[in-house]
Image 1 (tube, helix red, strand yellow):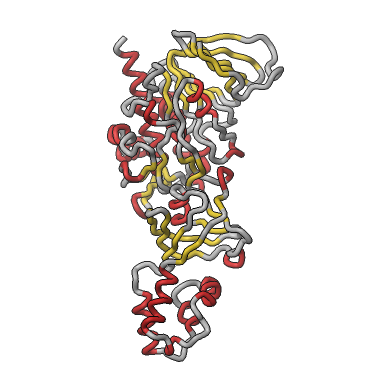
Image 2: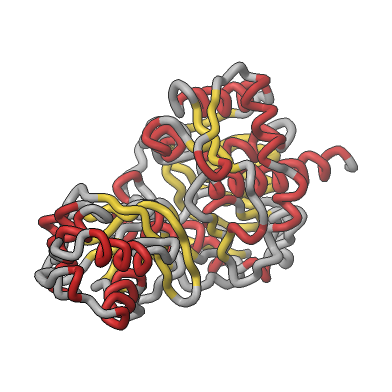
Amino acid sequence: MRRFIGFGLESGAVSGKGSGMKVETLILGAGAAGLFCAAHAGADVLVVDHAAAPAEKVRISGGGRCNFTNLRTGPDNFISANPHFAKSALRRYTPQDFLGLVEAHGIPWHEKTLGQLFCDRSSKDIVGMLTRLCDGSGVRVWLRTAVGEIMHDGMRFRVSLDREGRLVEVAARHLVVATGGKSIPKMGATGLAYQIADQFGLAVTETRAGLVPFVFAGAPFAGLAGVAQDVVAETGGVRFAGAMLFTHRGLSGPAMLQISSYWHEGEPIAVDLVPGGELAALLKAQRRDAGKRALRTVLGAIVPGRLADLLSPLVGGDQRVGGLSDAAITEVAGALSGWVLKPAGTEGYRTAEVTVGGVDTEGLSSQTMMARDVPGLFFVGECVDVTGWLGGYNFQWAWASGYAAGMAIAGARATE
């Protein structure tokens, strides 16, 4: 008998007599992956979550519009120790499949750049769709419910739940862990999934905050807070194009968030402030046509003025552009196309959109998301070592992995 004590319960916190119940499938976590799994897992499914409302991260995502998938989704858009693991689930449940579901529920949507799909009205449309799918499948959802002791008696998983002060022991043939990662702890995120994995003998890869802003010692960019610039950012040989946003503490914006998932503490990042390689030609044209202008003035016409003020001392901005030699122009262009910065760190899980790393995929079936050595135990969504880029990829992984597990559970029952 395997057991783990103390997930979310404190001694003396439960009042009244305990009770017991059996279900076919118990799902821990009423987020995107958990609810989508529940909707496809067949009859007699119970979903539990500590939150007061389902799918809270869905609700707050995309500025309240929910970037619910990306039409360009492919295995290369994900970070994992096993880059091949996600292929099966992503192939079996595609962005077009989810989009068809969205349209069938009458949810208006629009496409932004790079295949990103958003709700026209509100992310609540997606939350409502998920809850309707679960209602239609007879899924029970218990909110404000904490997970306590977990064990397996050789036949069923037995999980102690604190449902608003009352102890309930649930016995389930299938246990699905969809509790997410460590990102945004103020919403109740914990390492619960990793503890459960460890209990049942599954390895967990190193985890870190991903899709998260960088911070710098001494807040050197505080005076530029709110300034944005289109850049190409690079770290560890990985490059992303997009906007970079200066903040009071450091750097954010899509380009920075993307490379943060690949960045490791102590590594530098390189920023091309004028992508396209045309800066040298532009400076030579200015030397010919407006040689009396200061380099600082020329830079101010290329990048935002406050950013030009910051960069000017680095490239001799007080000198006239007419006096620059070809070598000097090449040096200025190189400095701005390879601006090297060394972050002190990131804002961490407090503001991270995702957790990089998680339950090691070596211990899971890529077809079903079930633990290879623990029949009936599944891990889906963010808690698995599959992390998507910014732009709807993580939601598509939630739908695809939840669908894979749900269909496996339903299929197992159908063959009995």
